[in-house]
Length: 92
Image 1: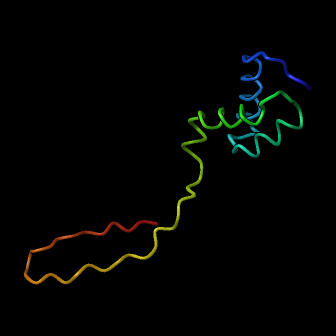
Image 2 (image 1 turned 90 degrees about the vertical axis):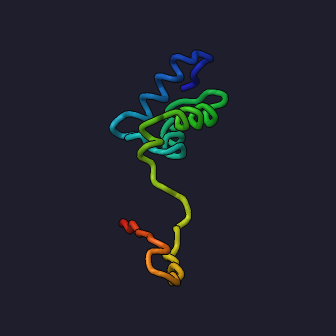
Image 3 (image 1 turned 30 degrees about the vertical axis):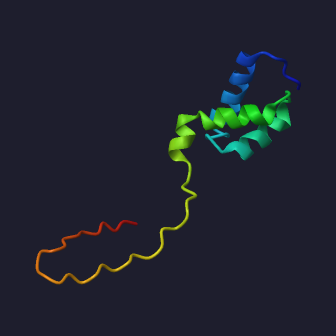
């Protein structure tokens, strides 16, 4: 189904596909794939990208794709007592 230039309708469609129980605030590619099965409009991929970028629930719950921090590095042995005090917080 081709959707016209109605931005309100496009926004409602994006919200429906992205926030539905089947959509479950999925990422850009999954939302775009589901949307392409039902609708088309010029600039569809850009609209989905902008909508996902502004979705606060998705941004808060998406997985962290940053590089693994690596191993902890040992501290140097201090020369006097109470020269250097440190504490490591190790989680996960």
